[in-house]
Length: 411
Image 1 (cartoon, rainbow, N blue to C red):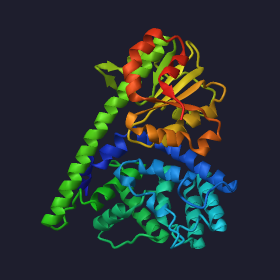
Image 2 (cartoon, rainbow, N blue to C red):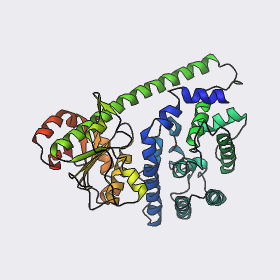
Image 3 (cartoon, helix red, strand yellow):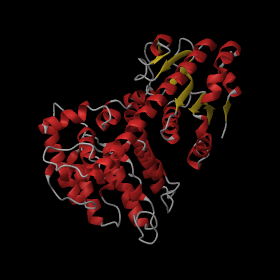
Image 4 (cartoon, one colour):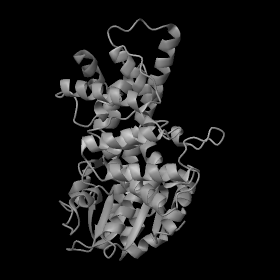
């Protein structure tokens, strides 16, 4: 087992490295998804939740989850409305919808394991068609030390590791798997984390046949070819993400440069300050720390992860905030800016999404959603090519944040 864990943790292409420990977006996702689940419960209570998955706040939550690398690919599929089967039965059935909303709300309101397990037992007793342990993907992002994520690949990996024959679709089977995962995670505590995502990642790799235990039989030629294709796909994904990270850092540098030139104090996300652009560390051009704010600690932690923030010189008043998007969902960036605006409504002047030119249509669609417009949240967007091309001119001729109107757009 230790040899398997060592291989899992040391391979840069395994999800332990690509998703769990070296993915800053993973950390941002927890509060974003929590806010999204809160929106789901509010929509259900206020009878604003539609009779379909598409366009619902639940779709936004699952979109944010599926952004989280290969581990969560397909996490949204069980929630798609299948009219012929009437599943999952939480759209047209109002009683089931209300119960699902209360279940999520109760899970949001506690951190006690026994209370959470009791909520699952009660949900299971309702026998809501099509609403099984796929919900565990949501629960993981609410309580990562209590619930492991769950999908076909993770289940297959569990069966390989434990030589078992567990099946999908049953809460009871999921809870049995969970007990074993927690037991194994505790047994190898020094190798993993309190966050059960690390161990679930090991099961995922086993289920995808990217890792093979010693007792696994020799692969057939067909299986070997399949794994090779998976490896090449993943390797290309890692290279693509590395390139996106470089562009992300470049955009942060341009925004910091413009903000400083105009006369503002600037700062980048707390987990990005050591990044380099053309051998220049971002932190060398920013404030040493995020100015103190009179807000709850968890909100402050989230706000400090926003990609770039401009402040009035010598104060803690935020003038502009920027989220730079890559291949992740535009909506997750919007939620973080929404979080900032909601927490500090009197402070914020302008909010911006910076996105690749190829994603302009998606930006317009997301910013045009009723949940954004009805919230009186004004977010403009800046395309990366425009920021890159006009950076020096903005630095030379700008005297306030209003210069950004020259290169930004409203949806």
